[in-house]
Image (cartoon, rainbow, N blue to C red; front, top):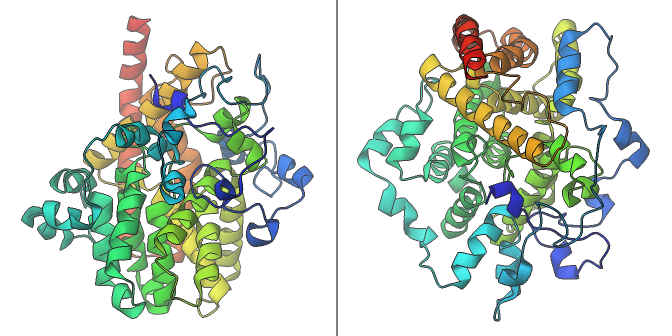
Length: 461
């Protein structure tokens, strides 16, 4: 059975128990709009990146195509009810077998933890998360972490050397390297538990949006934090936020995109009013883990951490790409970015996370090619599901109309190049030039391969 067929369903036409409203996975942590903000739904339904654009702007049109939430066809789909959805329904009996403490139930409500719940209830052996670092933290992995600031860092090899626990080891190492554990007096047991739970809540069945991607983004974020402009101005609090946002930015990703959730009437789309659906869910899931582990319970700025973490994660919404890029370009044109200003530093962190999130085309070819294949596999998998259920196939998800090369060339041209060109204006360093160099070479490689891939597709057809 396909992974996304098993997403848990919380019917919106039934009363929501209080304990469910406070849990972290797959639902808002609070129904209060005062904590997270709730703009006018009429404005939300009309958002397309928060800026207007000319109809001839191909970059804006491409971004709008990727993030467009308007649904032209919802054939045969009614508002979602438990067990009634043709492929998102799930048997909730596994969550209520026997007497399970309320805390554990809350932990089982995320997409990933729901899939694990049946194994837990059958008595399958569990790993002890508090000893996982010592068990898998081998010498080769330690050697690799000595070069964690290298842009050539091979996250795939690192994940294999750590037995699939790369996100835990890498994030822990970076927090320690920056002195954040000691500075903020983070409890080691709580921190390790938090990192293990974060890693568990990524879906390793996803070809792309999994814990390895999160580790890769965290490593890229580390590279950006070390750039002179940022290293000279960012506070320890900024660095802590940046690393945590990178590690959790795709938490509990179901392996399908926002338009898919909207056109299947998924409850997450209704919950977040069709706006930044996945990003809101990633944020709320991360906040839920922070609260569950009480990692920052001793810090007076706990609420501020949650809000700013959300601001960073929400910036990764591809449908808002033009909004952030336009603002960044304006700051650079007017030369008015002041990194002594906390709001300006936070905006730069948002741009750094956006770059880290889509930096795959800027990696060396051997790494970039693997990521390209994985993300396209995930796109095509979604397209196959849509085709099977007679839904309109989402852009870039039709394996018969697209190739890896065509998907990557379009993405590089309209999304990656404009963003990294502005980042290079802001931070004109050796790293920026290296990234742009790899980007150009990788795009040329895919362009050279495109005719061959198209020919192969025609022969198969």
